[in-house]
Image (cartoon, rainbow, N blue to C red; front, side, top):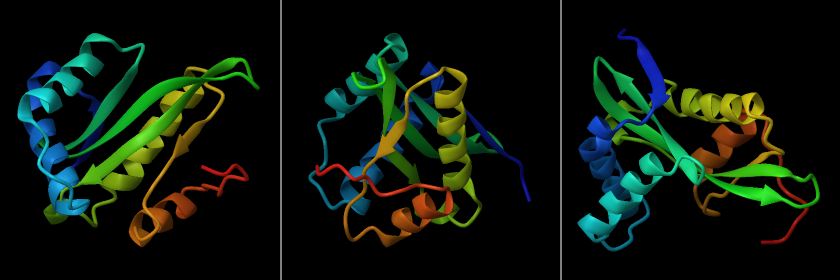
Length: 146
């Protein structure tokens, strides 16, 4: 089995990330196709402004098969930066290779290494696969209402 590599996204990755993000939005969440320029601008913004967040990619033999997006915010109660794991997606054909787990672990390591207060995430109520992953990774449901 080929080695899975998790790393920060780079400018050369934009076309593949954009393709995966479109799959995530349209195929997985069944939302309208986003404007291509606006989606590309979002990816470019994260690359150009690392203080607002970042994306990690999962790749096998040079092919990007998944991504995770962290957006940064702040915790007033802990007086530190916090992060929202807004997206975690692996292409349908690449699932089952632990890429989702490794992307999650990379995000969590990043948060810990940079002394963030915490990392939160959201998923739809009917996304049982994601909920199972987050539970497996030690996630806990919040006491806060959203």
